[in-house]
Amino acid sequence: MFSKFALGSMLALVSATAPAWADSYPSRPITIVTPFPPGSTSDIIPRLLAPHVSKALGATVVVENRAGANGSLGAAKVATSPADGYTLLMATTGVLAINPWVYGKLSYAPAKDFDPVINAASTPNLLVAHPGIAASNLKELVDLARKRPGELTFASAGNGSTSHLCGESLKAATGVDLVHVPYQGPAPAMQDVLSGRVSLMCDNLSNVLQYVKSGRLKAIALTGKERSPQAPDIPTSAEAGYPDVQAGNWYSFVAPAGTPRSIVDRLNTEFAKALHDPAVTSRLESLGLTIIADKPDEFRAFIAQESAHWQKVVKAANARLD
Image (cartoon, rainbow, N blue to C red; front, side, top):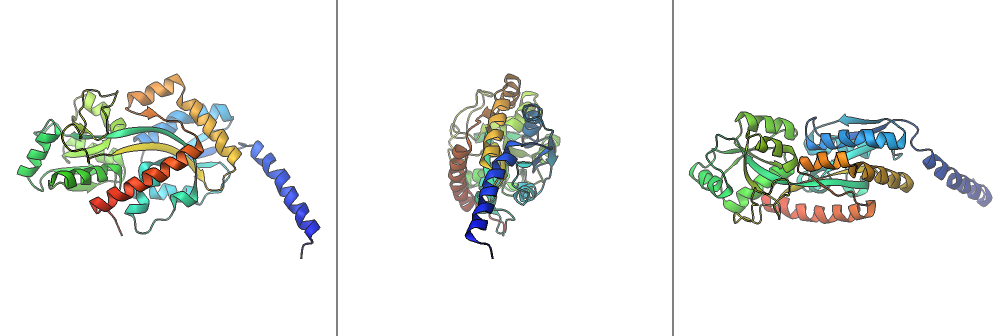
């Protein structure tokens, strides 16, 4: 059994060595796990920031895709990784604020398993339609859906995603009968909308704006509280008379719970610098994103607020998957 003197010496040794270990960070490659397939905004953001953060930290930053279950698979991997700053998660609204209310059994707990690093950027959702759909605005779409109950389909990035809940909110607010078609990620869902196999999708503005600008999709309504500076001509769902049809996404970085605060703060600083690099900012804004770059404690409070909001939406849409 340890004496009080021996125990005190051990604690002093730990206290003395822990900061030194943190100060040597990073000494090997850092992996950012993005829990969605390549091609989506949650993949574009970390790949855009990685070279800047890598240069600033003097260590290689690798982006790894691990898709499935609305981000749950990738999130679970990071949740069980060592809390040493070498494995990070690109976390979306769904991963941190929606999944706990949608899935009866979740392999991670956002509030317990992660330390917030930074909320990078946000975007509202945009309801879009294939050009073959005979509707150019939300009123026309609702009228068409009422005439053709059960015929129009809407794609989503997966059960419980913001694109899913946006469609469910539209059904609840208007009483129309739309058929949900879930995919594993926004990129494959969007491909089927572009091809006309699926009628609609209410996906992140940053994912779909390029297709609206090129004429491959029609913009129906922006599901945000205000019009977007990147698409000022697109009216909001509230302007069309459906203020309850609200959905959007934010993209963030979190670390496994227990990561030393000095490492979290350093990562926050370098990610914020990268986000405010003029070339990075310009690229993200061109995709319809708004830069946030907040502090860890501010982000923690925001997650709690968003979680409470989406809990109500999931309950109202009866979107729970047990």
